[in-house]
Length: 203
Length: 203
DNA sequence: AACCTATTTAATAACTCTATTAAATAACTT
DNA sequence: AAGTTATTTAATAGAGTTATTAAATAGGTT
Image 1 (cartoon, rainbow over the protein chains, first blue to last red):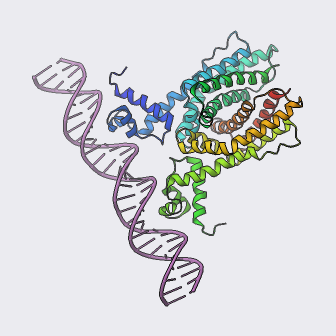
Image 2: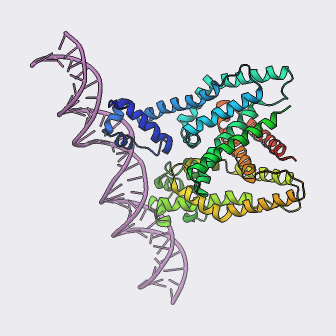
C-alpha cells in the first residue's frame, strides 16, 4: 500500500479533506498532520495550497463528467438509456457521497471551481450533451419518442439524483436512520426517480 | 433606515456575508469593516462568532421552513396545492438565491447547521409533513388522488426547485447568460417542474 | 453639573495560517 | 566511498484570526 510515497499520499489525503471540508476548511498544516509529514513538504511538492486544490478539483470534476460520457448509447432503447444514466450517476454518488456537497459548497465562493467547471464543460460537457441530443433526434425521427427538451431532462435527472444524497444526509440525521435504512432509502429513491423520469418522456 | 443601530446593522451585514461566503469564509473583522465599526463591537453585541452565526442560522432556516408551513390547504384541489408549493418555494429562492448554497455548503462540515436543522425540523417540519399527509389522505379517501408517497413527492419538488437555482448559477457562467435569459430560464423551469410533478400524481 | 450606564474604540494576547529558507537526511550514481 | 540530487525537517517571517481588556466617548437621569 504505502511505499512512503509522500507526494501521492499528500494528494490522496488532501483530496479526502478538501472534499469533506472544502477549501477554506482545510489547512496545509492539517493535511501534513494527517499524512504524518512536515507541513513544508506539502508546499515542497505542490508549492501553494491553491495549486494543490486546483489539481484535486480538476481530477474530481473530470471524473464526475466522465460518468455521463461513458454511458454507451448504441443499440438500446431510450428508456434503457435513461435508466443507465440514472444508475451510473447514483452509482458514482454512492462512491463519492461528498461530491455534491463539495461542488455546490465551493461553487458559491470559490471562483477556481466555477472556472474549472466552465473549462471542463467546454471540453467534455458539450460533447456529452451533443451525443445525447443526436441519440434523441435519432429516436424521434423514428417516431419512438415525443418532443422533449434534453436540457430539462438532464437537469431533472441530475437534480433528483444529487438531491437524493443531500436529502439523505438530512434525513439520516433528522430521522436518525441507521446505515441499512439509508441504503434502502437510496434504493427506493432510485426506483422512484426512474419511474418519474420515464413516465415524463413516454410518447 | 439607519439610526446607527449597530447591533442590528451587524446582524444584517453578517447575514449577508455568512450567506454568501459561509462560516469559514467570513471573519468578524470583515463584518466590522463592512458595517463600518470596530471589530470589538461585533463581539460586544454577540460575544462569539459562533453565536452570531447561530442566531442568523436559526432565523434563516426558520424562514425557509415557514414557506412550506404557510401554504393554505383549504378548499383547493391537490393540483392547485402542488402548484402553490412550487410557486412558494421558487418565490422564496428568487428572494434568497444564496440559501441553497448556504444550507448545502454548511451542512457538510458545520455541525451547528445540521443540529439546527434537526431541532427546527422537529419543531416545524414534522407539523408541515403531517398537515400535507392529512390533506392527501382526505383527497385519497374521496378517490381524487392515486396512491403516492408524500415523502417522495416532497423530495422531488424540493430537489427540482433547489437545483434549478444551483443549475442556474452553473449555466449562467458556463453558457454566459445575461440576466434576462436567467429569468427566462427560471420561468421555464418552473413551468416544466409543475408539469412534471403533476403528471406524476395524476390518477 | 455630577453620576451612571450603554456604546464604541485602541491595544493586545494568544493563536493559526501560508509560504519560504536553510539545514539535515536519504537515495542514487559512478 | 565520494559526489550529486531528491526528500524531509526545524525554524521562522509575516499576515490574519478570535476574543478580551481597559480606556474613551456618548446619552440619559437626577
